[in-house]
Length: 275
Image (cartoon, rainbow, N blue to C red; front, top):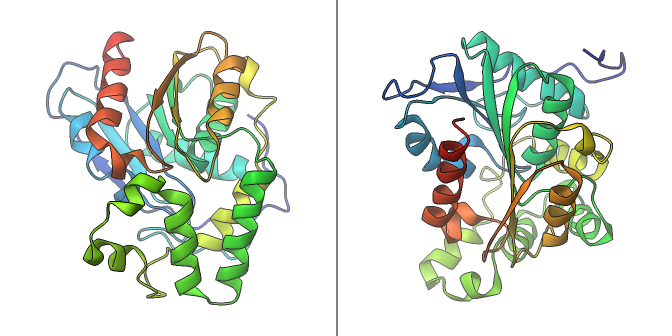
């Protein structure tokens, strides 16, 4: 396994939820490891999906990144290798020796890097609304997020996340109460580690890892995405040998806009490949 650079920030212990399988249709040692998005959390990205994954027999291991959920904030910049290694370690500690990684947004890069560094552990990949390397479009959004966070402008940050996270149709369909909740400027709402997680997205580059992926992979593009353009997903699918490609007509947050359709895509793929 590749050594983590000595200069990398030492990660705090991750807070991890382990959801046991509800039935025995999947071998006990096989499970699901979740990798959430930047400025998100396990609860925010996967709360509704976890029971659906556990029902057919998967043990689901769900770690929060530093500064999300109950995981303490890191004391410096995040490192992709270190984060990928930490997530894999959480699964192994939970007794899940091999697993399918389900990654969303930043979690797609974490998942790909984990597969590259720990091929003996990873049995499959599901990558939604992700990227291998940010382009100018993504970097402009990320720089805006970082500037607003640095200034403590939480009203502006909530507005930026609403515009980048939801499709125009979904945003315009919100009721006044729902819109007020989305735009709530409470500084306690964004995860404490939002800045470090956002900065990591700007640094990721897994383009060199993609051709070496040899496990069943599903790449799901969010075709109305205002943050990470769907072309990123198409490029990942083209570069991962044998990858399956699917589309869902949502903004960046399929778990918000079309959760049942997203869940169905994932469960179908897992069943078809006996993952």
